Length: 150
Image (cartoon, rainbow, N blue to C red; front, side):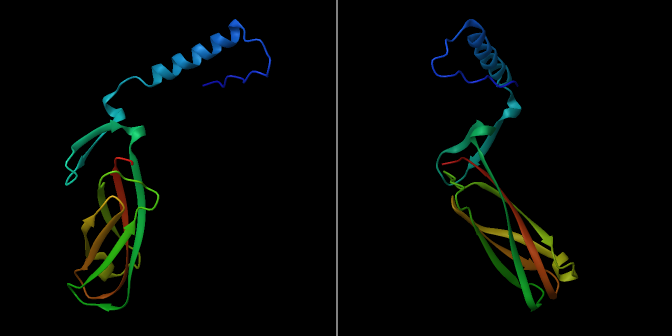
């Protein structure tokens, strides 16, 4: 989309300039046409407001990463906790959060893990990494939070 040149102070505004502004507004309007794939539906459990339908541009998506390290050998069935603060994210309600484990250390103990989110609020998520195999490991947790901004 072409940029409209800004007028100089005192410059008379002529038909060509107004025409360029009108064309730009019309192009914006055509690009912002309603489409089902431009909306996001987010359930807000526990907030008492139910499902929220909003434009993609009016939603907030946060990607985060936390690392859980065990320098000593963990036992099969042991757990390590983690948390992430959504600093500056400004969610109005607790977002929908997914967590994916990443085997950073490349060990067998790092490959046999599960991640359970234990608490989600509008400003923080807490979780647990459970180890299914004994050994030393470093596990990353990739987080994606989608929600209604404040």
